[in-house]
Image (tube, rainbow, N blue to C red):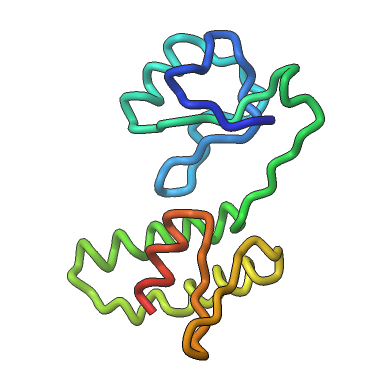
Amino acid sequence: MRFVSIDRVKKGSYLAKPIYSNLGTILVKEHVKLSEGILNRLKELGFVGLYIEDKISEGIEIKDVIDEQLRIEAIITLENIIKDNGNFTEIQPIIENIVDSIIEKKTFYCICINCKITMIIHTPIVSMLVSCL
């Protein structure tokens, strides 16, 4: 599997990972043959890339930095906080779960500066959440 810009995904490619809505429902299941209609709709929804299966990436598995359910929970909570002008402390338990997951999977780098640890994390949602701490 490999991540490809949606503009470079060809009609007839097979999806390697399911695509979820921001509410956690599956929009397109994995192993679906992508039609021009599906690709156009995903572009309209703002997707910039997809994980596809092909000969180039055969046998390669890409593991998620955080579990899909945790990612969806974080997105929904953040959307609710922003919509309701809520308190960002509501998301602290989710941030802690995300950080624990990242540490457990060893998908981060630590830099020690003036005895403070800064984590450089490889996903935009996690970077945004950690900056809220």
